[in-house]
Image 1 (cartoon, rainbow, N blue to C red):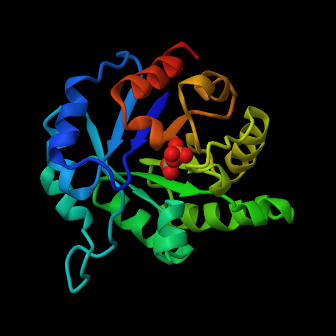
Image 2 (cartoon, rainbow, N blue to C red):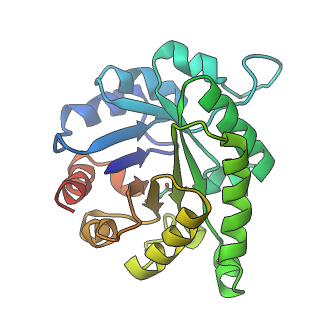
Image 3 (cartoon, protein in one colour):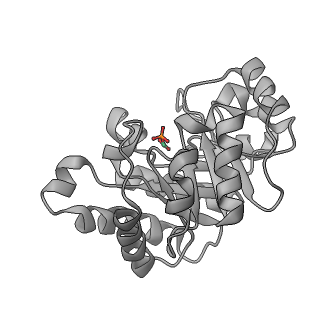
Length: 230
Ligand code: PGA
């Protein structure tokens, strides 16, 4: 089981260090932290696995505001998220950009958690599988047989809304994605200590990508414990 915490634009270095002082997860769960860029080094001091929240596809160049795979490797970061729905929706990231980010990161030796998921409008108009197929195939084509790739299924309507997909809805989407690409798949979207065990018990759910509930050591450790027992 892999449990990843996406801190989004929360926690500078001091808050990151304070988090790790109080965080005690079970030993048998792989835990990954995705802090903001300025807190990567503080998070790395904890000895935990640290991923960035995004990564560019070029090694260097005139790309203001971007960070390259090589720069992440240099500081000891182990991987990166790509294609988070907030990047896609608020910053205009396309499937092509997500695919290029994923391939360059994998080529640099980073792990990648690539996010996919449908909006409420897409789900209601019956297009969930079409959207997932387009998003997953772009990532799959770019990754080829590079191994260090995990998919995160995050229905956009469930992110930060308190509306979790039911375990059945999540399982259905995960099983569909597994039919396209045989990689571990994390579920994300309002995962918390109270619903984690039920979601993680589904056969095609291999872990969770947690936003809000990863910000407090106790709630995040409780999710990790649910992963340990399921
Ligand atoms: P949430 O965020 O757990 O706060 O819904 C999940 C995510 O955006 O990865």
